[in-house]
Image 1 (cartoon, rainbow over the protein chains, first blue to last red):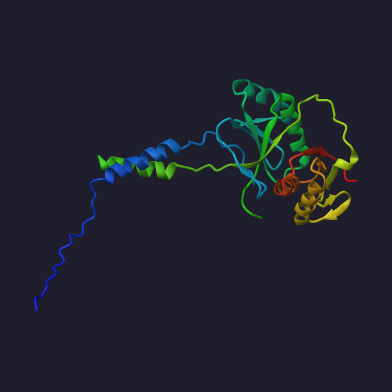
Image 2 (cartoon, one colour):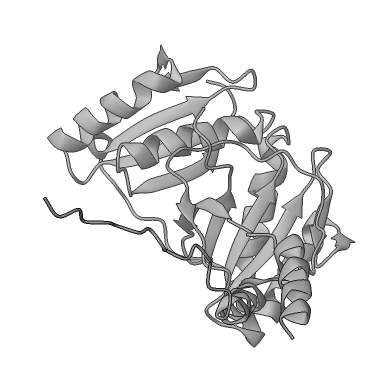
Length: 136
Length: 118
């Protein structure tokens, strides 16, 4: 009986030649997706909402409303009555603008209603209430 | 070369913040638009009091009850307008809670107003 001799000579070595290519690919991915946060806004605890939809980052302006009713746009504190001129100017620069109302969940509705009136008078009709998409 | 690539890679990985923003979109009516007359049959009033108590057409409800009841009412009357009235002293969170339930119930015709407890 002939003996078949099998020799295992598989060379176990991970090919690393393409490693740099992969690294560059990942770099390009991260570079293109990185958004350096330009706006700090206010520290807010967003209300939670399951039906919240994801927002596009383009054509988005934020109006921050803190827990004590303070309003900040572009990291500048503005009085509630001063929202309209600022937003009107932004709207002129980008007519497709959506205004995200980033308000703390504990703020009284009075303040938000006042801010909405301001947005309406500025012509910013497309708005969104920013919320935390986590389930309750 | 690949050292530099990895250095850059680590830099970008550590600085990237995937900003996932979510929100409840609304379209406000035009300012100065003439108020539309609507039949009271087509209106469902959801009121939130200052303490966060929600009533649906005058009956107190829990948040979880809103979705099925609104869904049922829309099924019966597709032109239903949900009037969300919120006490000025109520927390903003309670408005978002109600809007969330309405969003889940696919209620698209919503009117926001500020209402004293009644």
